[in-house]
Amino acid sequence: GNVLGSAGSVVPLFKEQIAKGGPLTVTHKDMTRYFMTIKEACQLIVQSMVLSSKGDIHVLDMGKPISILALANRMISLSGKIPNTDIKVVISGLRAGEKLHEQLYYDVEKLKHTRHKKIFHITSAITQLDSYEDQLNIAIKQAINFQERELIKSIKELVPEFVQQTVVK
Image (cartoon, rainbow, N blue to C red):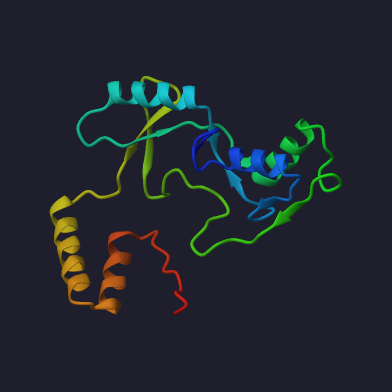
């Protein structure tokens, strides 16, 4: 998820692009992201720490994902301008490895309610840690020995959600 107004967030970038008269650059017309305020993020993180035991992983309820294109158009309108008339919105295209939609957790993971309605505990699908650690050590050796094919196979076994990206050299 994204914290509104933080470094790297799209909101300051859009503000800057609007101040310069545009255009606003949107990666893809269908791209969505989750957002929350700095205050909400900080409060939930602190509350999550209170609920935590060693090794716990939590995911925060960030509401519904927001369309980046709709956000761009809304920010242009709020500045008193007309989207695509006064200030253009340009679709720049997805970068390698970039996703259209954020995934806060994987399908193989299970969310469990905590005492806080906006904080969930993630239960991992990994049940046999010794076996997992053995597989991980094999993958590390494959990486050290530059065994690319074997390493990719091992990574796919360790992380079923892994999708190999094609690299242009």
